[in-house]
Length: 174
Image 1 (cartoon, rainbow, N blue to C red):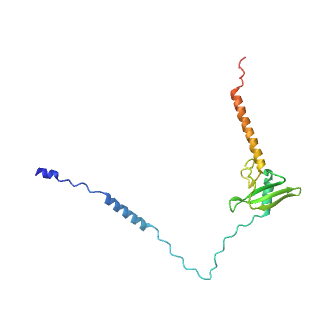
Image 2: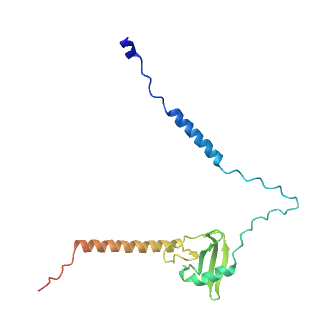
Image 3: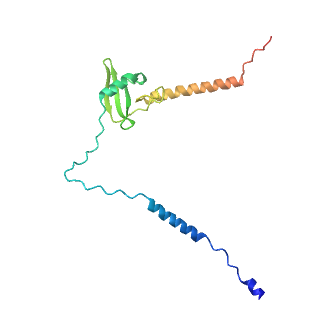
């Protein structure tokens, strides 16, 4: 008999998984119940009401604006045969979207609106806060790149020369 009592399996502790699942379900249900109720639908509109106005089309830039801005910033313009292109910052579109061709002669500047810039942007020598983007010709850009490359090579060559041929320090105390 003692053997039979020893052979009977001892029942284990019940699993706690079902109680955690139940707790999760209850918490989820309470969260759904705690969500705010949707607002009631607005009353139907009267038939006499006006239709909503369409969005206002962006206003075309005024020529006086580009004239005034260019007069202040013309020192950064790069001219080619008394002609250059600029893009004016548009605060509505938050971009340089208003493009102009500028021609200069003895009487002053003349501006013509163009759909986009046709020359490369000037990326050197212009103030960061400029309301205009200026252009330069491809030839002018290549000349600038060549000049910068020459300066860089000269600086490298001078540094190598100085490293290989250090100048002797004058001896102190003699």
